Length: 253
Image (cartoon, rainbow, N blue to C red; front, side):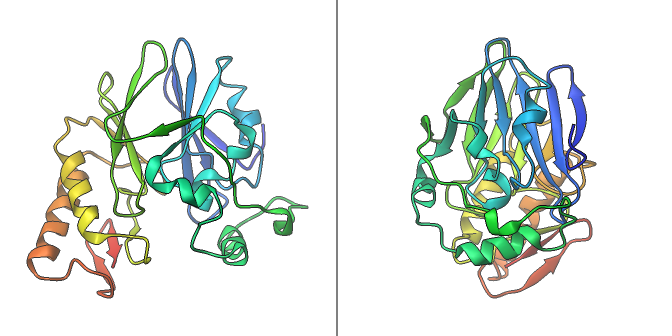
């Protein structure tokens, strides 16, 4: 097992695979069904996440990114069977709005990289998904049904994943404790609010974010929704506002 990854158990069939040696502290999630396994996000790609995953499941593995950003698709190259949202397919075909040098800088920013790692070998993953996803689609793992929720705002094709049977919500970069990013040109603050309204209406019992603290309770969904609604009322739900701080989380507009 690589010391780059930290493995935590959620339940007997669900694991967290974390990258704590990078400042973003990315969390990937492995959901094992009776027929197949789903890996939600594949991290930065600095180390081989496939080796970790195959120690945790003997089922066929499907990879899916909450969105097509470098810290969520880095390990996709190890998984030929991967799904993606229809609104971000162009980012997998050369259309990503940042240069490879900009991405490499972010990969190495505040990163305790393994000895011998050469960022010059880094490539931004490109490929054709085996399945194209849209809002409301279901991923059947055998004994576990994962529902796709299109939740744009942080990115155009951002997805959250809802497992009604366990009342688990995997929120990607839409919800986590720290500063949410909604200032990039490819972000949409108004869509962000609509997405928060969508997930805050669910009977969630556990929230699993893509970054930072795992001590996060479902009540934060309503607090974030309310804060975004207030920003809209005040005419501040737009790019250029700056950072709005709410204590255990913030949003950069």
